[in-house]
Amino acid sequence: MLGIRVATSKRGRDEGEKPFWISFSDLMTALMVLFLVALSVALLAVTKTVSEADREEKLRAEQIHVLMAEVERVANQFEGVRVIGTTIDFGPRGRFEREGQNTLSSPQRELLRQFTPRLIEQLRTSEAGKIWFKRAVVEGYASQSGKYLFNLNLSLERSERVLCELLRDPGNGEPALSQADRQLVATHFFVGGASFNSLRPTAEDSRRIEFKLEFKSRQERKDEAAHPAAETDATLLDQSLDVKERCPIIDR
Image 1: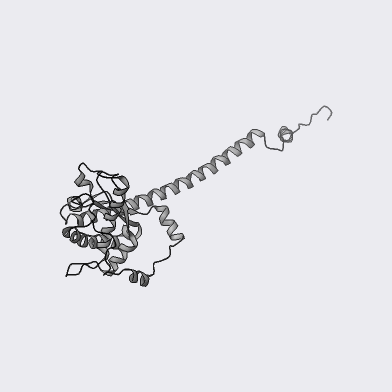
Image 2: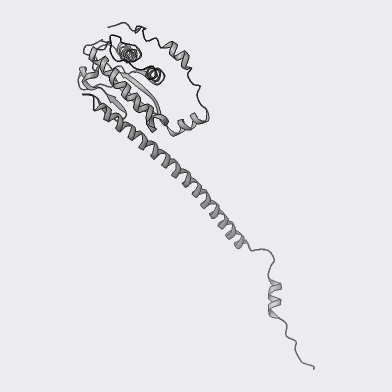
């Protein structure tokens, strides 16, 4: 049996020669795959968050649009009153006829007492009103005649005069706001004076009042839910709303 060669398994020899540790290129490939998987998961999470934010913002805009459409429907029932965006423009019926005037005419007072309760009803009952309504700013404006600071004070007085009219009981059988409406006016209607910073084509049109409705942002809504504001004491509020009190502004 001399000269007979014993065959050695080539497969076993090859396997023994292979290194135990993974090659550097394979390691880098694996790390790259892990990185791509992690990046895909992160992008998916961010996309989902952005999509949810877009959906909430779209819903907010739709609800406010529906509310303003209802407010416009109410405004159309009052001649000369119109809605521009979230601003209620009283047109010629909101003008102050002479320079320096801060008093309201009888038709203007009647218009405010008739229109405002209808507006408050929409703010109180609509989805946007319940969720997003922040405040209504009663903006007073003046013409460019006179000094800036005088007109700034005058425009504030014009705004304050509107609130005086809404919070008082006119008597003589004239319509007045309900106590619930007065409470909402006292807590959610604010005065604003713009002097002559928002002029109209004529001085007469510039001497006017407007209602500007403001709505909460999504972040304000979240902050409010996380940290609720202290509620106004209804009893103390009622005591402060003396409907017989005379408006403290000096008539001019």
